[in-house]
Image (cartoon, rainbow, N blue to C red; front, side, top):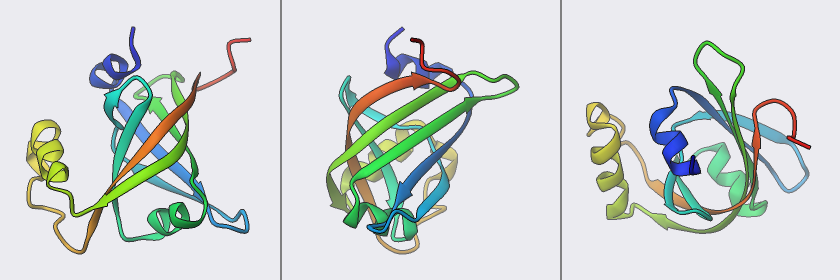
Length: 127
């Protein structure tokens, strides 16, 4: 199964972990990644600590745990660019999460693009 298909079908919760320039780690609950191709994903970020960390350290890990089981994915990511208040943000939100449309419009939003460096299962490394 392709990775974008996995995230379309799987139910669960995701955490995006980032670190500042000194290595201090932050983790935050995030929605599923938005896939543009097999190597490029994006997340919608508010102007908070995760976004600030990505300004000084482009590396992140997204951990996704499926509901009611210990299965999921770990995505190792490197930020490649971002768009502030991109019109694509609302298009993505409407397409995937119609129930949140207009709910979280406070402050600037960023569409942060990442190169997908590596995908591992939630537990183990398949080696």
